[in-house]
Length: 339
View 1 (cartoon, helix red, strand yellow):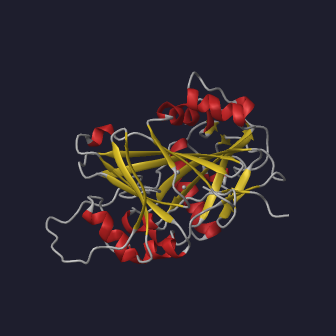
View 2 (cartoon, helix red, strand yellow):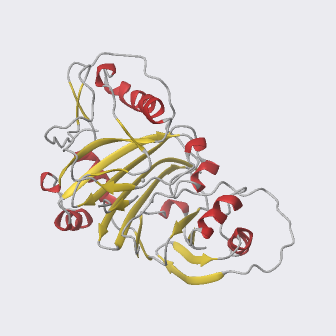
View 3 (spheres, helix red, strand yellow):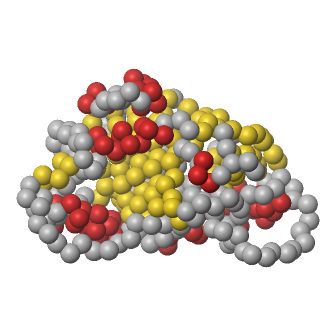
């Protein structure tokens, strides 16, 4: 099964963090599974906010203004085999090995919607991965070192798999809610590096009191003077990320008050709009070799609003201006700014 995109919506309410995660993929796989690092045992819900992603996309994606000029856009590829919380690669046709009974702590096991899930931790990644494999969760080959790093940081791992009576077509958005003592969250992309395609796209929305900015990734701008048609935009964005931040940066495509958005009848989005006064949309294209750190975002109230209007052949995109929500075209980390 090939993952084609990843979209994540985050919100922070004090030390409570909520992540809505949507995978887009082609094909079906009865062995579909996710493995997600989490700081503590989350509340897991399925199928919440499915329509919200499309409503947000329609109102916040870049709006291209001006005469479009046909150009030969660079083929950067949009498919991917991995994602922020992406599916594991298919298992080998045959795997035989004798392993000792793994020593793990099982913090939770349950079934929600079409998924079975477990939250576990261990001192050793080998034990944790062995437990996942024994219990029917796909394990990414070569993931021990990355999993060990998460365990050493005090993280737990949430494994999700389709229940025996569920089909891959039933995979729905996942909502995770948990507490984080630091009041922050991250996009755990280090595991993604094992099974990701080049130039994997990440799109995320962060709802909170103010605009957010990358804390440990670069702030990137797209030179609109090089964008002569809508087809030019993503190639120029990828070039800007590579050139300005060595492949580890985000473009702020929109930042402004949530009052300019409409829920359009979606209950999940209506709740977000009522609880938060500001939204930031960010996008990047990233290669697996660049996924060495999990990106985080910090509240940056000193930064101006960002319009999602892109003037074709115009000035650099991502400069301060009033907001223009268009009806045309991921975790995650929201951290209080240090004083």
